[in-house]
Image (cartoon, rainbow, N blue to C red; front, top):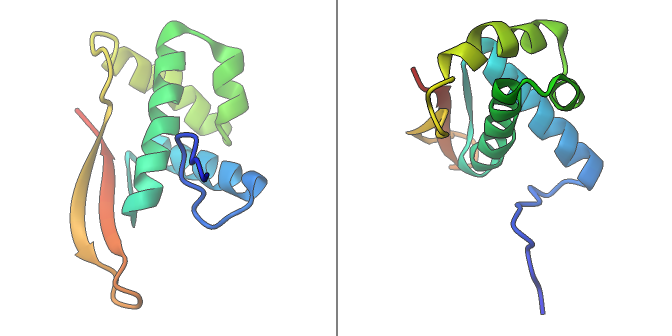
Length: 114
């Protein structure tokens, strides 16, 4: 019996998947939007929302282990944590943008909400 245990594998090894998700979440924090496939966006959303929630709580060690650059770390605590201080969750929004030309993969724009 096959069980997925709540995450998408994205056809990658565990270490590659972890690097992909943390790098994309860091890019989402820095640029406030990422254009990617729907499956990746759904997984990145989980990581990014966990980062923002940890920054809101002031858990600097946990955020440091998840984020890849010092600029993104500073932005999480200086800009995003105060912005979302009154919001209970749902910091991201997915807007479907159609299909990729090469392989017809469904694409989406993952953005931080205002």
